[in-house]
Amino acid sequence: MTIFNLGSINVDHVYQVPRIPALGETLASTDYAQGLGGKGANLSVAAAKAGGRVVHVGAVGEGAERVLAELEGYGVGLEHVARREGPTGHAVITVDAGGENAIVLLPGANMTIAGEEVAAALGAAQAGDIFVTQNETNGQEDAAARASAAGLRVCYCAAPFEAGAVSAMLPHADLLILNAVEAAQLQEATGRAPDALGVADVIVTRGAEGVTWYGPEGAAEFSAPKVTARDTTGAGDTFAGYLLAGLDEGQGMEAAIGLALRAAALKVTRPGAAAGIPLRGEVEASPS
Ligand code: ADP
Image 1: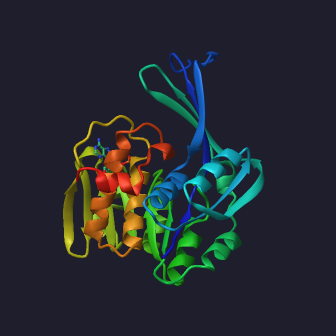
Image 2: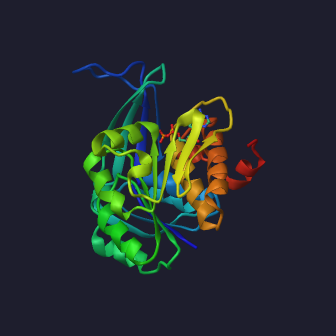
Image 3: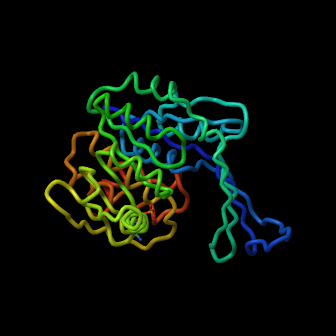
């Protein structure tokens, strides 16, 4: 089966600085690195590294050659990534000596996705395929409604959190994944607990503690493998990508959660976003 991911593709520009610049200050960077980023791209990479067949639906602008090559190298299908004039989505990330950061994000081409482009991508889908999206592109609601009507299982990662956008997506979602902060924000905004949102399956990720799955038979807790965390960037995307790859293979929810917990725990021991996401073989060899 196939996982269709409507999601962002960013270029991350990471500048090492002695400290985060003050208002009006110009500061020289001591190191620079460029890499693939964006929640959408990270999820596609995780699902592809897990062994899933992934079709990424999105858009890039200028300067995206390197990140597209990286995505392709991981085996992510790019035939439905549109090319635009204007900027590719990107993040300017300053990291100080203590590891604290300040980030400016330009959504760029990620916000230019046309309904017909999503329709063309989903034209190749079959009932039982998975559709997933997050909040870093436009067009999620229409796309989710279309995917649902075509018989796909719709998964929604409610990040970055925005109350209006998230509430509007709930009626379309079969599976909702959100972290504990987002779950609290959603409860505040809607007055409803995770098991009262009208979504069949809700998974709340709780960092080092693991996850809670609110499913048809109630709530179940799953603990995360104990590791020494080094870089938690992309942990949630790794969890979601591996979970969906497991479900897409026909695994039940418990088994897929177990696989995803091991993958995300291994990710946090490694630096980097996409590059730090482990391969399936590495996850299978890791302690559970
Ligand atoms: P996000 O990265 O979206 O903020 P979380 O912090 O909840 O979300 O992390 C997502 C998942 O990554 C967790 O449910 C867990 O499986 C894994 N994870 C994150 N931090 C750790 C950690 N310190 N040890 C083990 N697993 C972790």
